[in-house]
Image 1: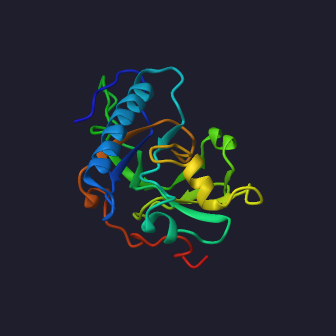
Image 2: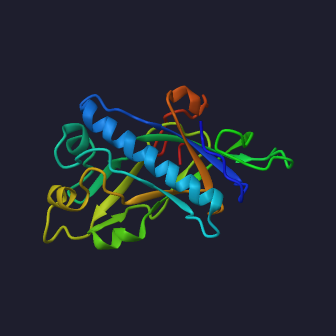
Length: 213
């Protein structure tokens, strides 16, 4: 159950399912779940109570991209380009039917009704690394229910290879990317226990280029 907040009535809310990859240890998975729960609590509190809440919700690198076969080998696109799996599946909705008589709001009682697309942006701190988001910004369609991924280029390839840079600048639990609502307005986040709680869509898990563009 989400906490109630009394100042802001957020326009958007996002459900997030935290994935466990087959080769990821239970201990590491439980660690990242714990970190996300703490982050969601902190984020929602700011959205509900702060005059100046954050526009984005930060995502953690779920494992060591430089070591695991399913992390490095399976996602290396070229000598300088890497598809970084973010270990979460999400669904965002716009709140259109809030009860104006309510005096408190949470991620559970906002009566979300309209699925919306959202954005995946690099955090400003990415400038401290040799990575740049290959497509500048990720546009996540309202019906996409697959794992979120970010394609990054290593702009320091002349001095350090991709694997070395991943090990040095993108360790487990590091944060390079964030989710933002369509209007950059603040939004509530709720962690769901089952993937089907995100909703079933025609698009489903179809990822990059799946719409034929």
